[in-house]
Length: 409
Image (cartoon, rainbow, N blue to C red; front, side, top):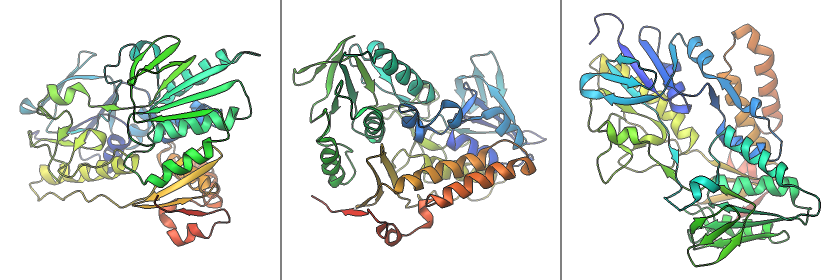
């Protein structure tokens, strides 16, 4: 171990990585490494499709955030990680030594090796992806010409993408949407009542929902389904599937047949004592949904446990907080999912906006004095629009004027 300040490398500067960096004091020599300039509020990228949000509104400067925490930021990509040697290498030719490492690489998009998907389908994972889709939609929107869109994936990203298309274009007869989900229903893994309600909301519009069949191939102007059906497509949006970064396997943090990094309940790697894994990349003994709020909590614990490990103290277990999930369907509906309970109300859109405003105000990399007007404005807006939903009870949500409790079907 270094005789001076302990050296901590954080690989990845998204929710988990930056939360960990903020929790570590300058008593440690912390380096955050990420190839992208911006931290993005990915849970709201769907709103770029309808121009409700701009790309700039969803981005914060990573380097400034890290500097404000008293640490160093390297805009670079880690190409090799050697836990046994306490070293890593980057695409930019850097060779860095560390005493402890926090791996917070997140997840990558996954087309499942579907022929043509990489070339012809537009991914939907980040702000640049959403902006590219918005530009393509505008370019394809011609007077008198139909616009046929195929959405691959019925998870949260797919639901929110379809909702924004309907927000913007549901009264335009030129738009038709084919929505494909390989599972038996939309939002697989969540209560079935969500699928039923989404089908009800889509019924008046040119949205065809196809579940129980996957996509077998994608071409420039068509999509072939696993059941043989061929769909015409002017734009294919791919929101399905996640893949583990190859670095996890290459560094020995994931062992076949696993592709995600196997960790103990303390987030310490099962294969390297000096490595902790946080966020989507971590495979816990009890699998956990890949949600931003889990990544934030894991980042905080990873930072605490790194410090405890460096000091020879006992490590703490990660205990996932039972937080609700908010899912927007354009301006037609917003759902709050808490376990098997689903509450639906358009006014819940204010709660989702409140979370975004709260997060951006917390992370905005400017001085405390300068940040007060901006932070106060964001927090006031969020409070007016129901603030953070964790602060309110389900009983409170049920008091909303248009609230419905979706029962299981």
